[in-house]
Image 1 (tube, helix red, strand yellow):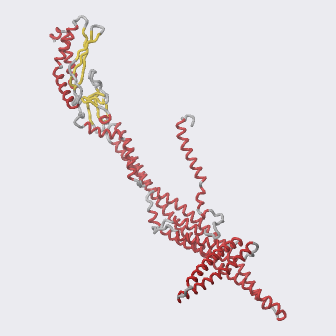
Image 2 (cartoon, helix red, strand yellow; image 1 turned 90 degrees about the vertical axis):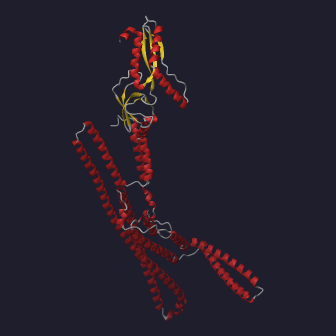
Image 3 (cartoon, one colour; image 1 turned 180 degrees about the vertical axis):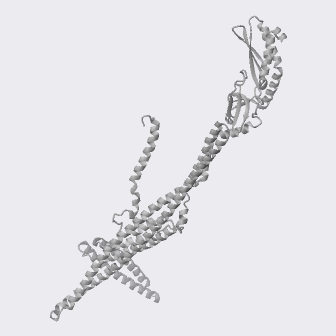
Length: 612
């Protein structure tokens, strides 16, 4: 199959094939680009200390909502996801607060330093409060020591600021050394709150599903919307699956917290029972252990309180994620409904395209049947079949393209490019049309004129808007008999070519005849007689031609021209050949030629001339 393929055809086939292969390879290599969305990774990891994926998921897919129903579900999902993440932060803070760590080494030293700084800050604050009160009293009574107190107050405030900064640094160092995550969680929470202030949901009023779907009036637009809905449904389903997995994980945490609550409650009850069982025989021992037991009981009660709060938060989060999953389910159902609506509209568009094609076929069959009944030339029928068939095909194709893609959005630009392309393609016809105006002007040509157009000479038979038909006669110096060929020339020659009209302006032309003077005749006398006859016969035309040329010289500043005939002898095998050149009208050239031949024959053969 490919043995006879030339190198050029192989390149034409190979280059597009290579481009398609490269594009498909690149598409396969970049197929994971959608995983840049946080909720599509599904690797179980989170960027910070608190899982914010529920909100990131909604923020990623909410702008995809199209119809008013979808946007309502998107807003509900945003509200629930926002609440879920807030509860996650609250739970993380409480869990961090419940953690008890034994400080040792550097952490213990930092804790001791922090305790000292706390005491120092309290003392600095007390000093500032005392000096503030003293300054107010001194100012009220006009005491002269008020400026001194003011200076002391400024110094105390500066010292308070320095100690506070040092205490904050020590607190941060202790959090890092002991693994306390509360500060980091607070920073994440602050960053989230700042981001929420700048969040723009990009949701507008939207239209109901049916109206929104009908905005896609073309087949291509509806198919694109159908695939977009399919992708959107897949994203929402993935988001729902993620929320369901998170809810299952929270339910496991809920069960674990239940176990911890039960254990702490049991420990508190066991502690109360131990105190009640203590008798009078061990009163002294009970009095010594009572403070430790009370402290442990308070710690357990505090732990139970925190676990109860976490338990409540988990209940709220589980309920919220259940509602969020239901919101995603409703959103998915809405997209599926719009998917069916779009499929219905696609079928309508396909039916419309099929109807256009059917009408085109029927029109073609009807025109062909009409042409078959017409009694005209077979070749004309074939031409009409071709033209009408092509016209119907073009109209049908244009209507199909409009139904599939719609009217171009950049119509002025497309029309301009189309006009430029048509100008290039049909430039000969455009020039021919304007050339027709030139030919119809004062210095143009008319039917019956003798003309020469781009080297083709003949008589004008037809002068149309685009074409001119000539009956070819050959060169003017030839015999002048028509060749019998009908030559059709496009009228662009009037603009880009050249033509001469010998019947109107520029009707004078040089013509020539050749006669042989035999060697037995007085050649000088004969030449003089021939010249005299030619001058006499062409005298009238010579004067008229010179007068016309003189008029042209005055107007256009041309050189001097002489219209006098010339008689030039040339040697020949038998005597001499005399070339006679003279000016005559183009329309009278044959008559003048015959007249001169008769006069020359009368010179060469006087008796024959007298007899004739």
